[in-house]
Amino acid sequence: MSTLASFKSYLNSQLHVTLPAPTTKFSNQTIIITGANTGLGLEAARHLVRLDAAKVILAVRSLPKGEAAAQDIASTTGRAGVAEAWPLDLSSHASIEAFAARVNREIPRVDVLIANAGVFMTQFETAAEAGGDEMTIAVNVVGHMLLALLLLPRMRETAAEKGRAGVVTFVGSFTHWMTQFPERKAADILGGLNDKGKARMKDRYYVSKLIQLLTVREFANELTKSTKPGKIVTSVINPGFVATQIMRHEGPLFQIYLRVLRKMLARTAEEGSRTLVHGAEGGEETHGQYLDDCKVGSASGFVLSPEAGDTQKQLWRELAAKLEKAHPGIMQNI
Ligand SMILES: NC(=O)c1ccc[n+]([C@@H]2O[C@H](COP(=O)([O-])OP(=O)(O)OC[C@H]3O[C@@H](n4cnc5c(N)ncnc54)[C@H](OP(=O)(O)O)[C@@H]3O)[C@@H](O)[C@H]2O)c1
Image 1 (tube, helix red, strand yellow):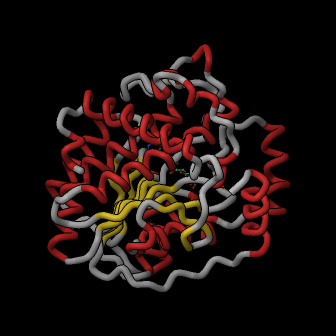
Image 2: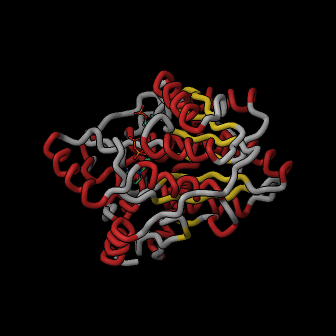
């Protein structure tokens, strides 16, 4: 899709599409959702509890906020004890490892991971505990892929035992087409993004969502090649433009502009969260796909171009090397 076609499709989606209210049951399933104390994550978790999930783990960086969210979900759905808050800071490899170790100790079954948490940074900040990665890339790209890889063995066991494919779905964004991504020409793309002197922070969130989409497409290819028992499907969801706190770091003038734009175009967090629930339903047809308006959609023209194919492979090699260096043997989990 060209940039103009992507823009038209975005406008049409915001103005004319009513997303279907989710009805598929998640009975007996255990679902982990990151960043579920607010916004899209909170509303998706509420749907999942209402739809009979056995356990929904709200993976949050602030436990008090997570516990308040779990309480809120219990009182609005009438199902107490299903949503549980667990601490997880995606900018810290130690926190991600501790979270995954706890899952392996305490949870015999994991059916779905919704990698939802995200940041929209406007200033360059380094995630000190994530090997010096810039915060947007650390959280939106590296941290979530590390989490997915660490949870894969337990998810495969579940899938093999239940005879149903596990689902790892990442919350992406239509904004992946809003960057020219000049950083892709570097010999070391991820390394270059950690150079504070050259960082284009205006663009960084869009770049992070493009890199996320490209790396998940390659992750899907690797999963397809794997001969391990227990099938996993993976996808990237576009929730559309949604009234949440994601742009909290923007300045006061931009907040005024945003308020107007939201009134004209935005979905509520509940409406947007329907796309997360759709992603969590999985299905063979969603594997490796960009999901839009609760169906398989079309990524940007660049993502589908031969040039992006090379960039995608380069990014995957770099991400795999980075994760393998920090966590030797982790790529064997695929
Ligand atoms: N809203 C939109 O228009 C839109 C459009 C496309 C895609 N998205 C994507 O949707 C996802 C959810 O965002 P949202 O719109 O619901 O925004 P939000 O209301 O700001 O929620 C973001 C969530 O991520 C959590 N988070 C941030 N950094 C984290 C970290 N280091 N470790 C763990 N959790 C962390 C936040 O926790 P705290 O509350 O503690 O900060 C919060 O729970 C994001 O991936 C975003 O990029 C949003």
